[in-house]
Image (cartoon, rainbow, N blue to C red; front, side, top):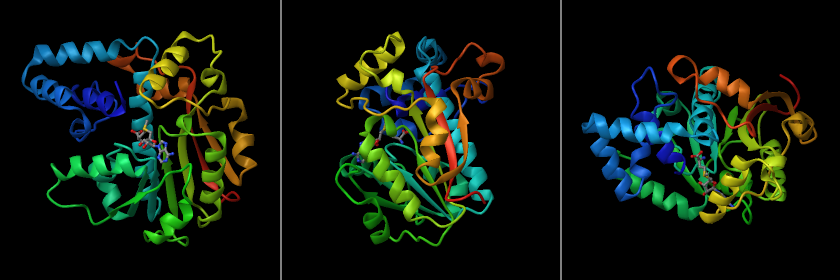
Length: 287
Ligand SMILES: C[S@@+](CC[C@H](N)C(=O)[O-])C[C@H]1O[C@@H](n2cnc3c(N)ncnc32)[C@H](O)[C@@H]1O
């Protein structure tokens, strides 16, 4: 099941049980899953069955999906409260933060994504939103071919504003060159005090020779979906990697940190897969 599906099923759980709440995720599902979602809202047995099957998650990749969304939701709202004026969501896909979190309506939001994904997203959202939010601008970009800075500036992005870049669920699908190019454009076009948050997989899990059976399962699933996994970096290297590219105040959030933060009480059996992490960092020298 893909990210929007995982977030939709999580949103069916009671407020005490769910880790993230994304009531818009359902609009991005295919017709069968949308039907199942509607049925689950009405029928407790169907709902429990679906939740149970998704929560089984022995490899922890679904737990990782909802935990990272929750962490980034909390982090981005805190940044906006602290004075961020502009948010750029890189590889936004079916991320619905800009539409479901009130804080985002106070800033300018640029959603950057592949033109094909963006067309589908806009069409689906228009079926449920009364009008297009004035604070959101869609910026079609292919990270492998286009200049991110040119596209963003043409869409109204301002280099002088304090900005947060969110890059969720994207780095594994890019080449190392595209990751580097994106990070250097982010640094070159941001004002002091701006920041970035993104998740990544360990290089050992991305390696086709990986011995980890859940990493292998993830690789096979992504390959089958036509989105092969390409980029990974070890957690122990992330601080040096980002410092060498112009970032400071690097905060690494490991899989165990995420598990501890998100999965307590009724959720204490859920665990984030050990090869996925989040990092956030300040752009430029320490503030
Ligand atoms: C797994 S989805 C994650 C989407 C969303 N951020 C989330 O967490 O739900 C990966 C996203 O990366 C985008 N992406 C992958 N390769 C890309 C490229 N070369 N240029 C632009 N976007 C790309 C896809 O369009 C997709 O929206």
